[in-house]
Structure formats: C-alpha cells, structure tokens
Image (cartoon, one colour):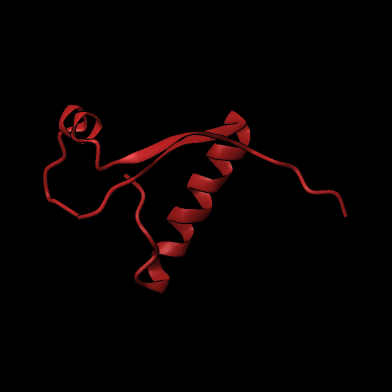
Length: 62
C-alpha cells in the first residue's frame, strides 16, 4: 500500500517505489475511500467501493 507522502522523510521511499514502477513498466493502483490498519484485499475488491487497475508507465518526450 502506497499512500500520499505526509512527511518529507518519506520522499526517499517514494522515489524508490517510483524507480521500481519504472523498471516494471507500470503499477497496479487501487483507490479506496478510507484508511484502515488492516486490509482485506478480497473485501475491498468485492465491496464495489474500490477502483483501480494496472497503470502502464507512459514516457514523455522532451
């Protein structure tokens, strides 16, 4: 689970994740309405409240 950066100390971890996404050619992204300490991916997927999918890396020219 990757959440928004809430503190400047999290920037290194985010750039590491972005590097991994670039090497893989994309990422699976899920948008959920609320944060919970425990995640049940099956419940999130079956609830109809989560959205997402595979997002490929798009290279920009210039």
